[in-house]
Structure formats: structure tokens, C-alpha cells
Image 1 (spheres, one colour):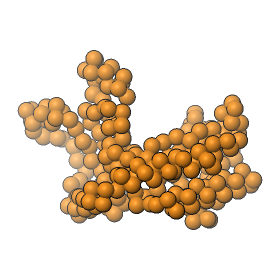
Image 2 (cartoon, rainbow, N blue to C red):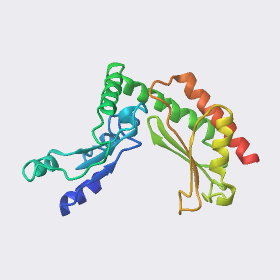
Image 3 (cartoon, one colour):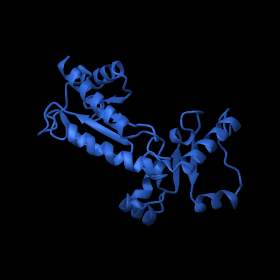
Image 4 (tube, one colour):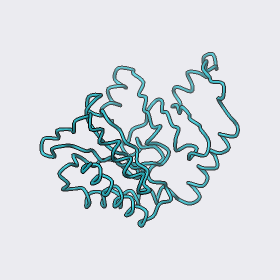
Length: 219
């Protein structure tokens, strides 16, 4: 990301980062890009902003971009019917106040490290796990038919959907996705535990995910 920032600066290109899923504390810092030492010109945020209590999103901009509007027309000519909804804004503010008050980002860092460790212990040598990656409480597990070649499963098998179904039956919600390699092949599941989770919850997540993957592979 630093190299991309350098290239954008060199050619006068705006750097826009999408942190709708990974932002607002999910990776252990308020913005994921903080961990890369990069500040974008524009950034989108949404899901973690309101904590799921109200639908809300926002576009954050640098001082340079703000000044361009302020010194020009002063008008951002864009909008939606329900933009600037006061109830959604109040909910988002309350969520951010709780995150700060209860130091939840400290818990995200600690539990994120535990999650990465437990996933490594459980799936590090699994013959059908191609990769485990992520930051904080935002981790992905990639499923492959052959670990050494990273050959994906036949997309007709819909392994990601099978894992979701098996996990759901065992009380675990995962975010499945297929076609992550070329639009057709590739399976992964995403884990995004709540900021308030504890060690017992993380251990249960990993255990139930292991059971779900095993069941899906056998089916």
C-alpha cells in the first residue's frame, strides 16, 4: 500500500480505499490502513460504523479534498433519499462511544491474535486448507482440493455453501464465498467474530468450523 500511495502521489492520482468490511476497528485499529502506514484521499466505511444496529455508511476524505470543495462551489452534488438519517447517525455515534469507552479495539487485537493462533493450530497442516489469512477479528480460510498445488475444488461442488450449511446447523455463522479465483473456481469462508468475544467463544468458533469443514468434505 505504501508503494501504491507513492505512485498515486507521483502521478496526481487519488488513492481510494474501501474499508466497508475491514474498517472501523475490525482489524484491531480504527482503520485497517493504519497498520500499513498509509492515509488515503478517500475512504468508504459502513458495516462497523453502526455495529449492525442501523444501516449507515460514510465517505471519509482528506483535508486536501475537503478544501477543494470548500474553496470551490462548497457543494457535494450527490445524495440518496435516506442520506444523513438522524437515527442512524445517533446509533453510529453511540456504537463508536462504546467501542472507545470499553477499549474494545484492545480486545479485537488480543482475540484476533488468539483466533489466528487457533486457526493455525487447527488447520495449519490440513490437506484441504490452502491458506489462512487476515488481521484482527477478520480472518479468511481458503479451501483447496490439493494443498501443494492450490488446485481448487470443482465449483459444481459448492463447497463453501456446504460449509455454511453445516456450520449453521451447529450454531456458527460464517461468510462463505465461491468463485474467488476466476469468478467460478475458488472457495473460502470468512470469520468476523464480534468485538466483545472472549477466548471461549474463539475456541468454540474454531472447533465448530473444523466440524463443519469435515462434514462438508465428506458430503
